[in-house]
Length: 108
Length: 118
Image (cartoon, rainbow over all chains, first blue to last red; front, side, top):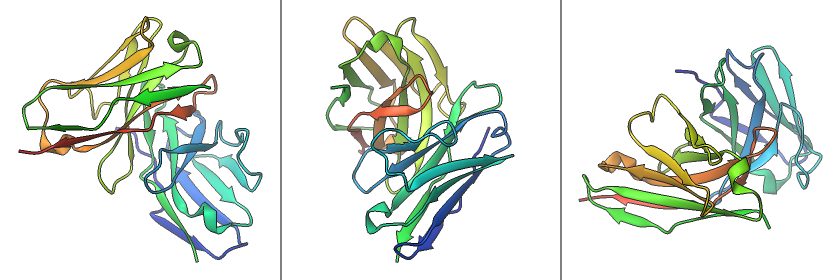
């Protein structure tokens, strides 16, 4: 079955830039979506359609796509950004969708 | 306010059946896909399946096909996730979420904890 691959963890200091990657064979044909999840909370959409930001999401969150890899970038990381981040996309025929295994962002 | 409200926590024994619910409000329920997502304790999100309440068109992840049943009742604006015979490995938090026109899960329920233990 289809899989999306994310790094297990990323660590940055406050004010630095965090980049979280997500790779999958169908990403050139399918949009990717990014969710933030804090402990004990439901996930929150932070990026849709590769690089669009929902209303209410800070401008420091951005997304990009290149070939089989999409990237979530958080510029000027703040302590409140510490969370798990998941990418989501569909298989090549849009039959079903998957999440990546998640990346734990630690703000040092 | 657009929201999804899920049914409460469940404690069940192996082999028992279960049906949990997700009620939408503040929007036209029948016009948006509703998905179900599993999160096992300490683990990541898993996409289980999705249903279009307007015509009950349903898609399942290969990992969950045959293991659960997703249904919806548009008259009551409620989607359901059910098991015919629970196993201990079904212990998890289950979220429902609305899929927006952009295909993102933009609205999430609060989650339902299911515990299966003898």
